[in-house]
Amino acid sequence: MSVGSDQDQARWIGLDIGGANIKAAHSAGPARTVPFEVWKRPDELDRAIATVVATLPPGDRVALTTTAELCDCYLTKRVGVQAVLEAARAAMPGRPIVVWGIDGGFHSVEEALGRPMLVAAANWLALATLAARLVPEGSALLIDTGTTTTDLIPLDRGTVAARGRSDSERLQTGELVYAGVVRTPICALATELPFRGVPTGLAAELFASTLDVYLTLGEIESNPSDLSTADGRPATAEAARDRLARMVGADRDGFTVEDALAFARAADSCLMDRLARAAERSCRPVIGRPAAAVIAGSGDFLARRLAQRVIAPGGPILSLKAAWGAVASSAGCAFALVQLAAERFGPGSELPREFPHGPLLEAKPS
Image (cartoon, rainbow, N blue to C red):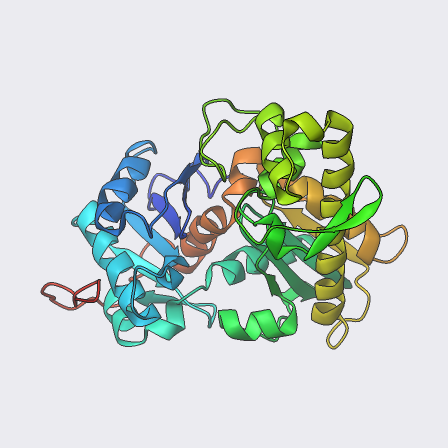
């Protein structure tokens, strides 16, 4: 899916700047997801953005959204928004940038700087706005499961029916769950899980994450070159067994492959229960039990199982991977941005007015 081939149409780049990943998409179709832990290297964000953008075709305009402002390297979200926008300007000098807001509109960088809470953590709304069009009649639930979080957005007759807008509001309504298929610590899922049939208290340490659960269950492929794990060892099923063992005070000598499978199934069940409760809280006040689901994200395998559990029996499950392609689905918010920007700013349309500017405010506390 692409915006179109009209030669007069601007070429858009969509950027979704997260705390752990930078996601990018181009109006011609290509999309990227590149890991980058902002809180570890905030001073390198501009270079990281430039590197990702360089892998895409040339672009005339940029539509941007951010969630990286919540990283604890920034004293406040206001400071975080300023830092992200400063990095984007430095990475793409001379290119017009518009910033997506929680009001469902695009804003100039200057307006975003003056009203940072208007643009903080608005990426979910871009994806939900576009995904809702797949279900123009009846009710549905958008389930976007990524590495870190899951969005559970009620949809009603082709429109977004979410009650929350900020992260805090969305956490309260169940529309945002800080749990995903890679980065969530196992000790954040439960205080105890069964080990050889006996409820066993879990170590409150980052010994293992949900990546190890889904490596063990075979729903995420092993990647020996990926060392962004709890212990810095490879993202393989074998190494995952070692990490899971430590959650119950064991090691591989006393934690078999069968133990790892049973433990992973229990952890998965715990996560599914948590997401199902949140989905019910998200949907009940506005649409009741959803008749359909739209699933997206790198964890769409989990989203599909959740959809089968929470929607009305026999309801359709629509996959953004099938509609948009696997890469575009995993970078869904960035992909949605280029579609929405191209619609909003067609040939002859003016972007939100920018003003002359000097250096932005200092991005990090002294």
